[in-house]
Length: 355
Image 1 (cartoon, rainbow, N blue to C red):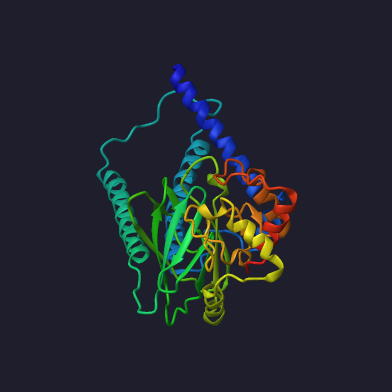
Image 2: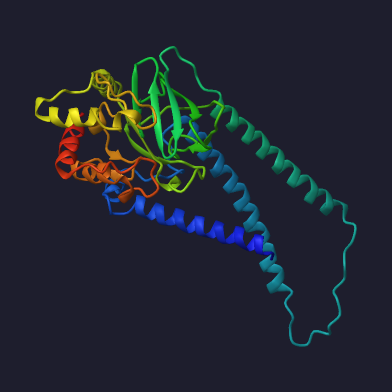
């Protein structure tokens, strides 16, 4: 192996170890996300709750059944041959009679694999059609998904809502489908949007728009993860999709459409926030803060987590995050604000009021 090759392998191994460490931290107990996520439904690709994910799971079951049957037949015949024709005491060492040119056998081992491959191709093509052919009812919800290092931005153009990391969608009744159509974009590098129980992975690529759709049939919170290595904090770029009954979703929409709360008790923190560099990156509707580099904070406390799932969203964790976000999420692009303890308390109190 050349020195350059060894260096590349060492770098890859180091990156893998870093990812595993980040995953362990993300799903661990340090900031509460591990315990909170453990209460949610398992992130199992074989437990689909939406049409695209169900189609993929059915294909997986079918392929596993076919390949499993082939494995059992081949392994069984091989085991039988090993046992039946094993070397025994008293063998004279001569080869048994050899058979060549059996047309029926050659026809069988040629035709059968071709038929199996043909059937798998047809079933796979049907699945691809189901996954890509999104239904287009007039009341379908459209959401623009933008991948950032390392968080997700969700824009609802028809509703005037912008939020981050937690995608809220209505439950879709199979009898009267109301899918959510996602347009995927990237603000920086390549990402991949993946919520296994709802659909397969779809790449999020700079200067390109991809599309996918989901139609959760059951209310609940479903976990996802950026599925494309996008930098050092790739593993801490998590997704929560909250599927709500239509009435609850309408309530969430109404709450998100309201301007940010103005609480007189947090006026000092609000003034401090609006006079720091925070406004260059974050938006709080109804204020002069209209930055686009970071998440919209208008209803920050309506979200379960901060840092794209790195920590539960509590005033205590928010205090640590604003003071020095790298404590929770190393290499995060948000800088430490270096506020005095008194100013930090006031800013956090203001942010904690944004429900």
